[in-house]
Image 1 (cartoon, rainbow, N blue to C red):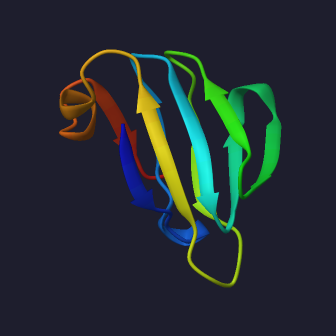
Image 2 (image 1 turned 120 degrees about the horizontal axis):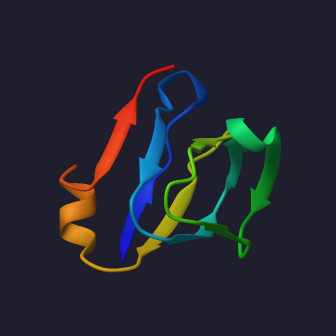
Length: 91
């Protein structure tokens, strides 16, 4: 599990994880976009969002203040955050 501040929209990379992940918004407002499914969700504090393995997605801070998200990834989170099993690219 990791706790991170969310980036603003212009800095949000498209991410593909090899493991299932769950996002929990601790504070603020996040947008989650799933390009392949033409899906867009707005999440507020205490909302959760499940991202299945292999699902391309983008997450960014949609509010004026800071947003904090808790990321829980199945398997070894340290490898996931180090980029060993995650692929990120700018769109």
